[in-house]
Image (cartoon, rainbow, N blue to C red; front, side, top):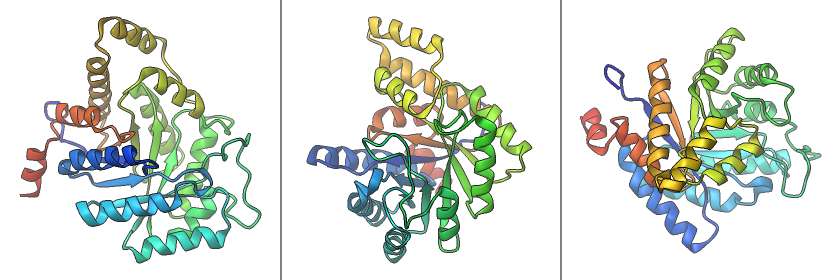
Amino acid sequence: MENIMAPRISFEFFPPQTLDASFRLWETVQMLAPLRPAFTSVTYGAGGATRKLTHDAVTTIGRNYGLNVAAHLTCVDASRAETLAIANAYAAAGVTEIVALRGDAPQGAARFVPHAEGFASSVELVGALADRFTVRVGAYPEPHPDSADTLADVRWLKQKMDAGASSAITQFFFEAETFLRFRDLCAAEGITAPIIPGILPIHDWNGAKRFAARCGTQVPVWLDDAYAAARRDGREELLSVALCTELCDALLGEGVEDLHFYTLNRPHLTRDVCHALGITQEAALEKVA
């Protein structure tokens, strides 16, 4: 990490649906808030399944912890009027940032189908929000399950940027080269807005592989072998911190300035990786001072 400036960081949380999950969210926020993230985001369930929970989490985090919170908003199972009403409620609550996504197909559906009176795509959603919010969007360094290839994803990302998005947060990936190739391709296609790598500290390797299969992330053979060996030795958490820190360090060495952590509302690995990168509460206070 020598001679590399500490990056800006951000965290993703998801809204709790049980009492235990609620305690876990607030423990996560309390543990990570002192690291002074540039922003945090709160996810939004398919079909608005967590609509009210997302709104409550967004407003509570902003009010009680003084963090800049970006609310996720999708196109799934809602009319334009319903979606814009949600955006209006966020604006009224003082929210200034939205993560605008098409959204996954609702549970039980094979693929995304636009609502008859809704936004047909994330590009349309971005265009409807960009005049009132700072809009971030998703990006896919490996092909989205509904996409032909990565170039098609990059060209779709360019449309979202042209519609008014200010930055993109990528899906997670396991090797730095995956992101770096994607960043180069984005630059070649004329995308100049920041592309923020999404980082997944691995709490459960089998769960991470299932997650990867759903979103098209390739799992390197060497990584599967490493976790098999770590499981035998009882060193999975140590391996996770080491590998995630190494991934972030490699990205920073290539000029990356922002890292977005998918916390899964489990803060300890994210905190440990941040500390290994020199991002601590003390460092955050020194930066402010």
